[in-house]
Image (cartoon, rainbow, N blue to C red; front, side, top):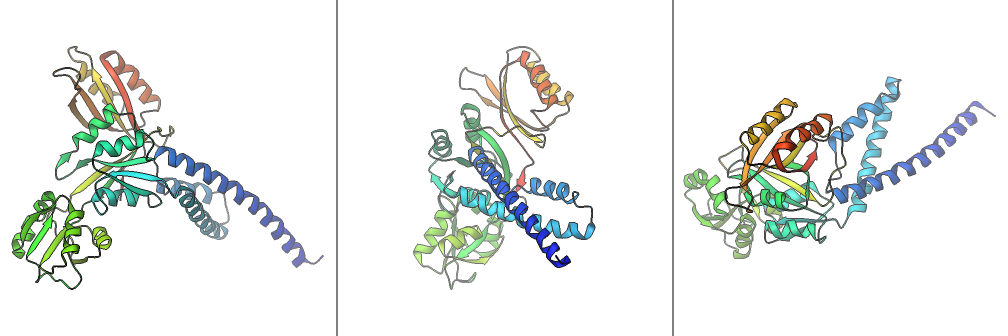
Length: 362
């Protein structure tokens, strides 16, 4: 046997081993897809991919071979994601609004493999997950321009779903018009009142008359159906594509820091992970002097960063409140267990509504 034949035989044996390992990996990817569907998680996990690249790259001591291995690993991860997308086709994602609204955009960006399913209200979207009609829901919890979405926070407290992640969507408003329209032909601009307020100075400078609409998507639809070159809409670029409109001028909103935070809700609680560094906690305190102060103190004492503390009425009794907490740290780690144990004597109710990795930008 020649050296060439020996080398080719070794390659054949290695290929057989790779084929068997490939099957094992893809079967594991299928199990991951099933877990992500149950827990309302997106396919793409950048933190996980970064960790894999760093860990697995170190398995190859030869620097030259390592670069080729990393290229192969990237291809494997792409194939794994493609396979998971295939398996997850048909995942129903509830949102409140209409196609083209910002909630729709958030749902599509988080779950590009899912079927966005519209509901008329936050409550209906939330309950669609509770009753099994949808696999998860994407709902807003806060906007940097208008503040908290109290009704969604109430649903989180009173409902049974868990938050599997929080995502930031920058709200970018654009001037839209029918094909052939220009900024000069526009006379009236329609949109949601909040969008019009965000773009008020721009509209005033251009001399456009504002016209309120139910939401930005309805405004775009109205412009498209009117066929009028003098009627424009304020909405997103995705909305323009959805309704066949053109972007006449981009980013016309004055506030550059307008962001909405969307939470993903699912029936199952995320598997406890040491990588989790953000949590959502609800609690009610006993009617005792210093009870609330004790909870706040313990959160800090145990090394957790208290990002948000808000109160809402419990509806059970007059002047009784529940508290909504967002914090940094692993609530299911040892310190988290110590925290829950320490605050239990002064709390009448405690619920961990979510534990997940860093908030992500869409």
